[in-house]
Every structure is written in structure tokens, then in C-alpha cells.
Amino acid sequence: MEKKSKLFLVLCLHRSGSSATAGVMHLLGIHMGDRLLQATKHNQKGHYENIDFLQLNQEILKSVRSTWNKPPSQELIAKTKFPLAKIQAFIDKNKKPFWGLKDPRTLLTFELWKPYLEEASDITYVFVHRPFDASVQSLANRDRNTIGAANQILIPYLKNLYHYRHNYSLPPENIIDVYYEDFINNPEPFVRKLNEKIGNPHDYRLMEVESFLDKRLKTF
Image 1: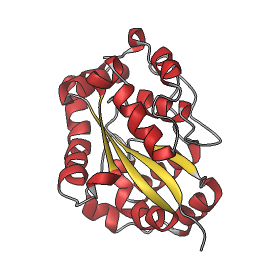
Image 2 (image 1 turned 180 degrees about the vertical axis):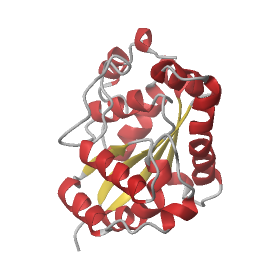
Image 3 (image 1 turned 135 degrees about the vertical axis):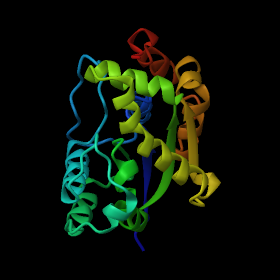
């Protein structure tokens, strides 16, 4: 029987510190994708998002006439006519012994991905937490939008994050919580947990991680 791969699946809101989280995952040897979203002025060290994964999530949302900033209900997602064979094809092409996926839209599309990802991999769920008001402020600043509009966009993501983290009965040993405000100042606990999962020495590349996490690039 083929040994299952290990997938590190990031579940996060937009503007929550997930790019820094995924960048650390990349530094520790987790394959985040062959084609990654390019850095921008709002994310100067990169997003570490697999472009094909992002595009599939956009297609799923489009199939129910939704977008990232007009999030659908879970009931609507369940009614999608999106060809699920595309999900399997993506996994077959992208799966690695240690691989990661990060896109905030996954909080909206997770139910479609879950059975296919579970079949292919042992999953560690990396939940990224940041004070909600900080994510709202950061999104409003990035998109030159109002606080009210950013709040409306992110509330469904927050509800889904809470649901999957607290009400979904995921095995506790398969969960790593990242609290962005703590993580940016002291990444060692997260690095240690990831390295244990991967099989690296507990302090593997810790100095490189600390160099990567430039607090001056923190966006609000």
C-alpha cells in the first residue's frame, strides 16, 4: 500500500498573517506549489499560494455566482455543479511527500476538497488567528475600502474558521494553531511543531525563519 503524503492545509482569513505562516512552511521544506502567486507591495515576501489551487477555488466560487469578497453560504457551495474530477486531477499533479496549500478561499470551499484531500494525505490543519479588527483594518487599507465593507466580507470567513476549529471534531493532534501576533515575535513554537511533523530536528532553519519574519513588513 502506498504511503500517504503529509499535507499541511492552512485555514485562514484574508489579511491574517497567513502569508508569513506559509512562507515559514516553505522554508522548512514543505512544498507549497510549483507555480506560486507573485509578491506584491502588500505582500512583499510573497503569498506562497499555489496558483492552480487559487484558480480552482475561484472557479468553484464562480460556479455558485460568488467571489472571494461576496462569499457564498455552505448550503450554496453544496449545490455546485463544479466538475469534482478537477479537484482529483489537481491533487494527482501536485501531491508531494510533504506539501502545503494556502488560500483564504479554502474556508469557503473546504467541504468540496476535504474527502479528496483526506484520501490522498494525512492532513495537519494549520489555523491562523489574528484579532478580527486587525484583519478588517488591513483589508480595508489594502483595497481602499470602508471598514464596514471589509467587515461584511470577512464575517463569513470568521464564522467558518470558528466552525472548523471548534465544532468540526478535527483530531486535536492534527491541528496547529498560529496566533499571528505571538508568532511574528516568537516563531520557535510553530517551527518546532512543524519540524516534529516533518521529521526535522526541532530547531531546523530557525535562524532563517527569524530572518524571514521581518516585522517592518507587517501590514495593517
